[in-house]
Length: 243
Image (cartoon, rainbow, N blue to C red):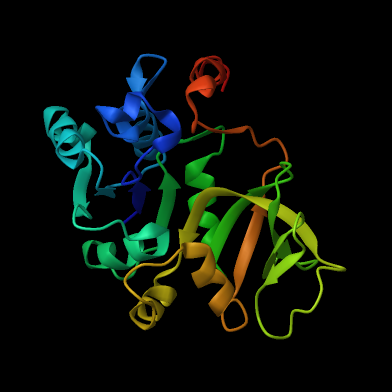
């Protein structure tokens, strides 16, 4: 079974004032909510089961999914209305929804891209997780060795390094930006029980990268957009028409 999770619980503060009355997931781009764009892209990739986590205006998302009959796939709601659990905690809370033998595709609701999710889903074979990365300019990068195995994280502005205790420098490692799209193997599911209820998934990857194999997947012609701010909405409409 192909399965996935969409992170839709965020407050969407950068999209105010729109998110004063609706969740980020229902903000429209090219006439349709961001959530619909991601769900349809997943359905096209053969995803049969999707978990959507909710917090901010949670009922609006639940009603929207019901109104559209789940877009023809099985959609489950992971309720975080009591407290936001961040990306890692969100996955931990949702684990019971997943088939325990199949990888899980994770996708931020506000990410638009030309990534082939069907092909990407298959990349987890032979590794414990696969992270879609690019050469996009940013302050924070994931660090990979020559075989694209995750070794750490750095903030190039502050010089901060995170990773195993053996990581003392970013020298000799390649720096790539994380896309917000990744695939987890079920081999990692037991590790979540060792984590707190609330944590970021990148912290999880950095904690376990010396024990498991997490690989970066570089799509050379990747076109990706984070629809995070009001002033990017028009740009997003043009973007989605061209991918």
